[in-house]
Length: 90
Length: 340
View 1 (tube, rainbow over the protein chains, first blue to last red):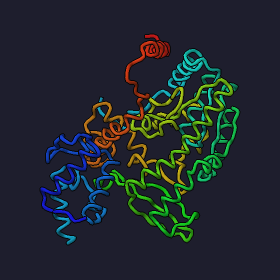
View 2: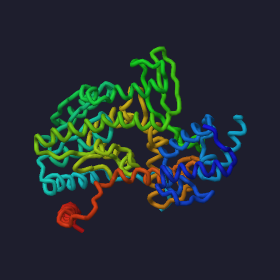
View 3: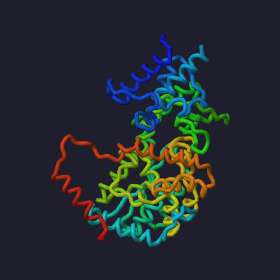
View 4: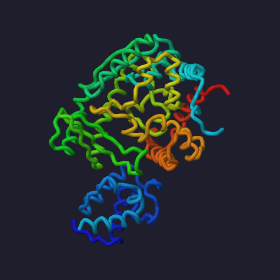
């Protein structure tokens, strides 16, 4: 899949994914720094699904050491980490 | 009271008598049943429950069911039989491999293993593992660990779909066991005894409609350490008391800590108690000789698991309450409450 990969576009893509699959409300906004796990937006199975979505959507593969809350526990962290990850991969 | 190593200590016989009194009321007066069926796994919790039911109801009113399947350790059946002998209760053994085969449990498991490891054959053993909470602060990513007949071990992260499918297929085991328990309970007008300890009940480590399905759960309020103390006082064989808790669910031996809790039972016991009773992580960490950050991580994981698994505790949701039935439930719950 060809994706625009600015940090903002990644944020929008992930927000849409969360709204569609976890929040079930396409108007619900999630703050950039809101903890996805802490706020109960995704559980551990949800994180697994989101990681799979990111790998498939952006054609990347995460190393075990990268699978930490610091990289994936908020929209802002995901967008920032994915931007770097895609940059590294390309 | 400051947090200390003996904080989970209790008077085992006094607690056993208290539980037995409650079980007698629940089974005979509230449920109107004549005895109890306990699925005995060869582990500590079901052994403690069988011993408590025997104390409460007498050996003639307790039936132990041993329900091994293709992936069960032979040790489990051996220890289950030892328990039955020690308690002097009746037992029936049913191998449930055949119904599991019929519903596609093993075939589906094998399909998932092959989707992750295309070279896998039926001889490869496997299990699901989670990262330890004692190590790095990793996300809870389940891995499929396999062992080949040549002695090699490989592990790969599971995809979301493969994980759900493997868990769903494996849950057939607990659900078919529950069907067997209720068959034998119905046939004797007995009640089904559930065997979760407090860690399992609180953290949702059970299968809805499987081992979570029961008429009464006599040790759901006890931490694992306390279950061990009570079981010891009731004469449960030492080999069962000291056995490392396993899931006995996958063909490759799997500890409950590596599949679900992320830490050994003794650590989990203290942390859950500390968390429930308002002890700061640093105070618990100092007694356990752990880094405070690790106990903080465990406290967070406790809250997460409790929230994630909370739907497992819910009955089926109704559009409108049915007051006539709600009143009956209230009446039953009041009847089982101890006199104040």
